[in-house]
Image (cartoon, rainbow, N blue to C red; front, side):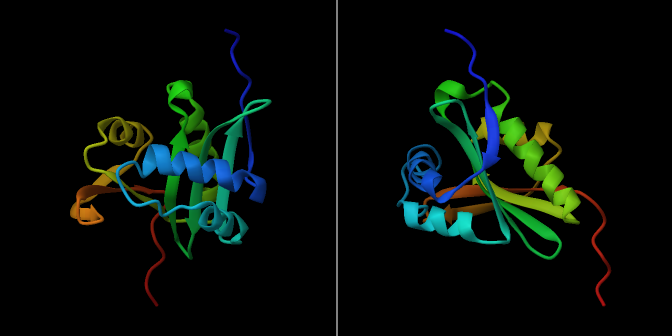
Length: 159
């Protein structure tokens, strides 16, 4: 099989259904479906949110959604189709968002992941994220979460 050419672009409303299904099946597996097509479309439309997709000529291969605050960004979703994993797609998506966060003046990026997702934990650690806290029952009172963050610069002093 020939290697696929992967393109990154900002997500549009037309991407929301596929992104929502990927979230349901790959991120939210075993949980209630929270990132419905309507909710994902809302995130895409928010001016303080960057929603990015990785695609080839015909398919959505992965996506990431990050919300920007005054000094903190929060990576809400990052997902790559299982058959496309370990090709650097997630690294490219996150790299684009990291650069955007630096340009936007963010001091840090924060995220949560299931505590038992060792592959994701190692991925984020390799990209400079540190574990901050373990939150028992974070996901519907059933699954623990591991919070992680990456410092981009020193925060501004409180006034």
